[in-house]
Every structure is written in structure tokens, then in C-alpha cells.
Length: 403
Image (cartoon, rainbow, N blue to C red; front, side):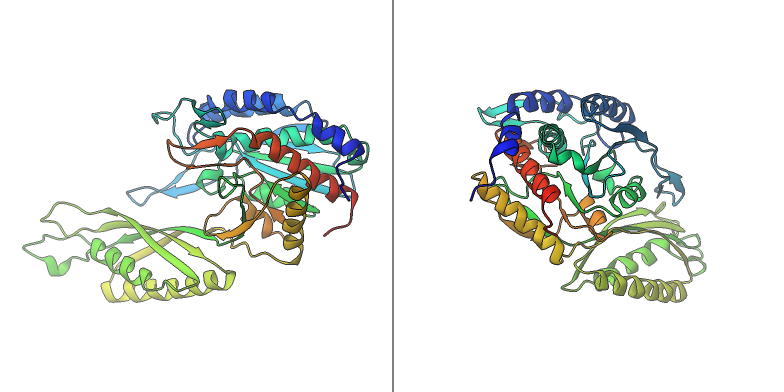
């Protein structure tokens, strides 16, 4: 029996794909690279105005403090944009959270700034898929649902953060706070494939910087008095890679430091990333890493400090999360959309939401591909398709006890 009848059918019919496309084109022409604070401020203003058509209260939330280690080993503050939050019916018994991000990976000086039609259904442009198209879907689906009386018995928060592409470090506390107690969550990252495949279970991610301080000396006269920070950092890189297992990857990515050829270097910074598939793998790695650091410090007589850690916990799929995936597939079938899913090593804010115990599907955005490259594209008909899908999923979550 079709569930597309009555108020829901009428609401979905009001979704205007052409208007959504116009929004995406406007937003994609605003450079909002994560470090472009001026562009992010413009996007926050645009989004605040666009989402003001929904009931509720819109606020610009200050970013949490974030630091990074520079090439000299100094810990410095990282500037982040403000995050847009819409709160609707905060006292409702059943509430949802919908999330997206306004930032892209393309800085203000990147050459990829223009929109180009590849064919009549495919638009190439920065952030079209990842994920300004997803933001248009959030707005369109909620606008449609607000026409339905039954929907107005539930509440929701919409979070659009400004730092997802760099790990959501300044928005992670906000994500955790807003997700707490929600019935379910949808995140509008682009689909995992151009066919619309959803990302299922996800691994986690952690970024680390190890600052090594040795002792300088003349490379010819008294090298034995020096303590070579580059050698220690290289030893760490090789030994950390040896900690890789089937359930965790380790990627030593960069070593900063060094000096003239005739100087024993007294400074180096090793940067690396880990991708644990399960929480236990991350915990094991932390213990092994600390033991290794202790060994290298003692053997090479250097000092080593640690910065960073797990920023995206692994996202396994539990019973409630699987029920939500099943619901998305069922709703897709009702709409003539074939929905499938696959596990992925990528990470997003869905990882952070899942860590709060809230079931989440985090690839409800447009169909497209080649994200994070100048070949990024969005399949335009998927704007209205996925808005209808999100509206139907949310309507059923609001009116039935499914999770």
C-alpha cells in the first residue's frame, strides 16, 4: 500500500527543483573554504536569510577554541567561522537533528571558482555536491513538511557548521550538544556514488602531530653531542606504520624540521593520520603509540610532545541505525528511487552524531561525484529527488514508532 497520499503527497509536490538549483548556484558562487572567514560569514548570512522562512529561532554560534601545531612546533590558535543553528519547537516530545556544512575544501585563492554545465543534467562547480546541494535539500524538505499538520507536533534542530572539511573541531561540542536526546538524525553529505548509494558503517579518523626536540651540534666537529630530531621523527614514522593492522590504518604524512647539512637538527614535527574501523582499535593504538614514544625518547634522548587525537569516532551500525537505513530504502522504493548502501573509510559529522547514540544516515544529499577536486559535479534532478526522500523519511519518523 502506498504511503504517498493525502497531505504528504501534496507537500512533496510543492518541492521546486528549479528554485533549489537557483539556490545552489548562488551559494556555490560564494567561496567558503574553511579558512576563508569572510566567505563563511557571507554564507552564514545567506543561509540565515534562506532558513528564516521556517519557524523557529536562528542563531550564529561561536566556534569552540581549536589549536594546531605549526612547522616550528608552536601551538597556535586556529580561526574558524561561526555555525548556523535553527531551533524549531524545542519543547516537542519527539525531535530530530539535521546537519550540513557550509565550508568547502577550496580556499579563496583556488582556481576552481566557476560553475560549468557538463550536460543538461550535470553541473560542475565548487561545493555543488559537497555540500551546498545538501543544504538546499534540508531547506526544501523541511519547507514541504511544515505544510503538514501532523509534522508540526515534532521539533527539530538544523546545524550548518563551518569547519566540517577540517574535522569539525570547532563544532564538535555543538554537534554533541544538539544531537543529545534526538529521536533520529539525517546528515546531508552527498551520496557515496552517483547512483545514490548511502554510506553505511564508517571508520573513524584521528590526526596527530608529534613535536620532537633534540639537541643541535656541529655535524663534523662534535656530532656525538647532538640529538638528531629528524632521525627520531623518522624512527617514529617507521615504527608507527608498523602498528597498522587490518582494523586500523596508519599514515605518516609529513615531517617538518631540519637545518643546514652541517648542523645536527634539534627540531622536527611528525604529522600522521589513523583510520580505526572500531573503537577498540583506536584504544589499542593509543596505548601502543604512547609506549613507542616512551621507547624513542629513552633510546634517542629526545623530548616528544603529542598534539591531536581522534576527531571522528568510528561509526558502526547498530539495530536502530539499521532500522533507519531500512526506512530510507523503503521510502526510496515508494518514490521510485533505488537505495543501496556500502561501508566506507570516509568520515563526516555522522560519526560524531552516532557517538551520542542517535541513529543517523549521513549521505542524504545530492547524487554527484568527484568531490574535493575541480571535477566535482552535482546531478541536478537529484535535488528534488532527495528532498522528497528526506521529507518522506522524516514524516514517517514523526508519525510512526519505527526506531
